[in-house]
Amino acid sequence: MAAKILTNAHKNGKKVTPGNVAYYTLQHLKSGRRTVGYSNADVLGSATQLNSRSSLASIDEDVNLPGDGDGVIPVAEVMCRDEEDPSRQAARKMDWECFVTSRDGGDQALLQCLGEGWTATESSHRLRISTLTQLRHSLLEFFGEAMMSEAIRKPQWFHDLRVAKEHFACRSERSWQMQ
Image (cartoon, rainbow, N blue to C red):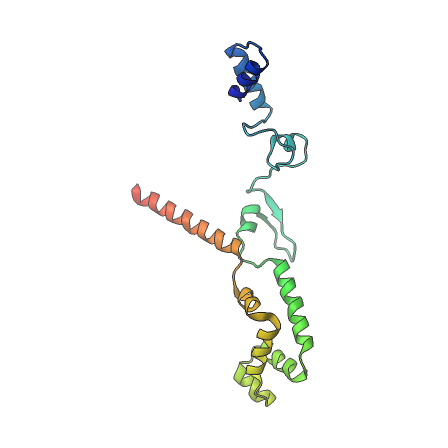
């Protein structure tokens, strides 16, 4: 900031003292300006915050959880929860309902048995059918190979958080060993 003030002063043919440069640099820093600019578009930019268009919140701040008395927990714990994203759950449910309605009565009965916890063999014997392989092919045809592998994959953010936790645990373990 000080160099920019000096450069602009020399471009405009003005003489400035080192005290003036230091004073105005400190004034800019006190007002929240950063060396990279005074942006209105950047969420973390000082102009955005000074204009009250955004605000920062502590990661230790408490939030209310929706649902049956889950209570209040810090934002950090919300970010680290092992639960799946509700939007993915809803999308999966819609896809599944569409698949089930496209099947005939025998396949729907088989899916019902499997959903109730029966094994594939028990379900086939109970319904006196042997279409489990055909149902599996129908699933692959309806959803596709990529969708089936996507359905069982953990989300990327979950992997990133787990790696960060493990890295932090290793770092703290090493610091204990050094002491």
